[in-house]
Length: 399
Image 1 (cartoon, rainbow, N blue to C red):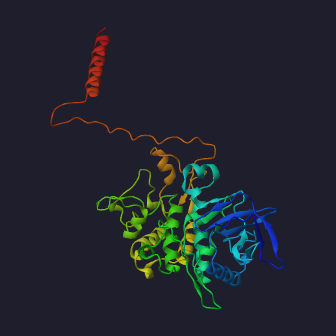
Image 2 (cartoon, one colour):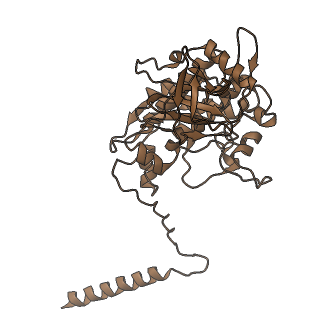
């Protein structure tokens, strides 16, 4: 494992960098460090650098410049952390990693923060459902743009994305992307896989090449998780049994989604109703997880998702009673208010509002059992009280 505290930035002239003693993050393949005196970049060092990694990085540096992946609104926000320079060992000059823009500064958080109610409330206290739809739209747009450039994300999951409070998204692990060097024709494959987002064909054979179609399946899962506020479209228990150990990854493998097979899945209490999804979005999800489960040609593309989510943004209206409730206007009323009225915790509470526990279901009203002739004790007592009141009224009336 690389333990360097000083490295060389392979620019002209070479630049010596002092790395922070504590890493910003560590994965199975590499560790990311901040750079002393330079808050704008970070360095990623591989545990086991190889010649293949070096060729991949050199190809990426020639293929594109990091500035090509900045937001189009002029904010300077990076939509992905493309390598900016090779990093070398100070002793022998071997390539041990690369530098890239730093995007983990205050205000950027893992996308999964939005799936956790407590974390969402703490870090994004004033968002509504519109914010999540906007993020999904931006993610689809980013994926479509990369596919246009013949770049494949390969491993699409919430763990590879960060989001800022204003709503900017950034894809982190670009060095795992799949692409072909247009000069040499060498193909660089993606070797990473996240089971809870991976398409069925990749679960069957992880050595299979990634493609826009495999990205599109993962994108569909992530879009649904955003719009369903964290609920995974393949969660739940199969009611027919047959696989007691089935989890999200296994349900993906076998094609069990409650968006396409609702009668066959048992869901946790509080699961959001897919009917809250705009019709065009729900249709794409059902195509992706139904016919598109195994048929690549039936899967909606990233461009399809972009168009549908763009359209959905125009149909989101505000709730008339709650400032932080927003919903698609194909619904008759606010689904978030309906949840609260049913005793569930508010998904989008006002900042500072005290969260309350869900109200237990009201016990069903008991009715007389006509076959037995028995009546509930409460009804007998009530009848006795009424009789006494009638007698008392008669007595007072006779006086």
